[in-house]
Length: 195
Image (cartoon, rainbow, N blue to C red; front, top):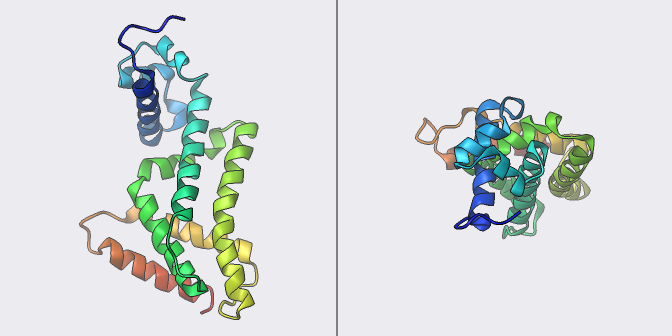
């Protein structure tokens, strides 16, 4: 198919992903049509298929991009080598990262059920890779006698679930500053692992 004069695939493709992300976060994946996404971008519905195979591909691309960006951002953290500093760094990083990307995080957790089994498996691999980062910290703490955690996998999942909860209630300009929230959650996580 010939490219439309004046079209910019490097601009339109990202705009389609952004519109899909906003619509999926606001209305839910199942309730959003390709026509709605096209309307939000300002293109004909048929034009979307020049950029994506279908709605499932958009969801998969959004989730993969979120997880890859999360893993890359975590890998870029300059954290101390000692276990307590790494655990505190994880807590603060996770809260801040999530609050800066509420739509991506919401989709990453709430729309998993809408992925095909093949796509789910690929996204789940990336999620496990991130969870493993925390579990590695917990295992090191157990080995050093710093943490009392009978099952580091379950503990990692529980900590991440607790940290994800901040997204549901925290509001900028509210009673607590972001640093205060991070500090309170760090104290709760520290106590939960038996420090």
